[in-house]
Length: 319
Image 1 (cartoon, rainbow, N blue to C red):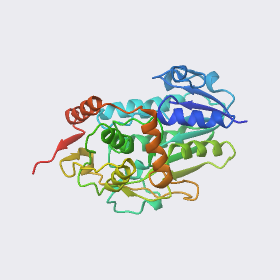
Image 2: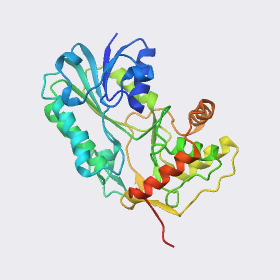
Image 3: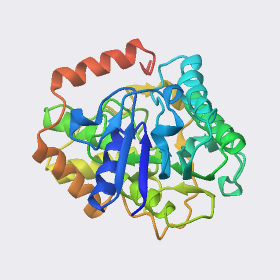
Image 4: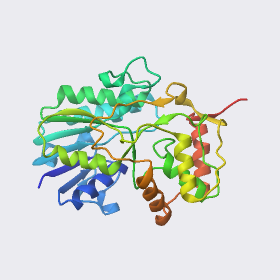
């Protein structure tokens, strides 16, 4: 069975990927500077940054997956370059004795709508600093990686263990938590902005398939349900929970939305990527959140709202 090593594997996507791969019989190791895998019951690993990784730590690995990145919108530009680009580049200072290298990038490398071009043409023009750092990661990997390189550009990834602080990536968990706490869901702008989603299990399944392939490629990963509006998703969640929602439409705006109203991506092989934010998938996800009881409290949500204002992530709309 192929062996996998996940750099940044103790985060949300990495934990789900590790569980998926180990459940399918694969040997998995994790390298993460923020958390020991043993702290959450994950496979064996090492606590260190990319800069401290040695060839011995990844030797014999069939697929090395790079997941480590900061994603919040409030860090400075320098932090994005240092954390997302410089640390990745340091990894290639060594000769990697692995079969394949997978970089988990992002559809934000295309920029966000409205765009003056069709993203299916493969043109990349990021419109914010996170997307720029992901494109720089791709360029560094393409230039320096000496093994088979796979670049996956997911849209918003959904699944267990998601951080509800994120205004769009955590939209479902954040909305469930707010409704469960007797609060109104938070909708930024008019709620018509479009987002595409992908299930974290599908991302893990893609990585598993890489072990069977030796044809390097760049692939987009969005669900086959197409782009969905924030209003639509919040309405579906309210219906599943039997709650009459009173969204705060038009009261707040996410500052970065002034540049990027809609999320744009062109899905590669839609028959592979299943639904993530509609139908049975959404129902199961909402039910799992409610059953687990692992939802943030009202106090935590209110504190997060205050911090988003203080950090300049959102602002009150002047009427």
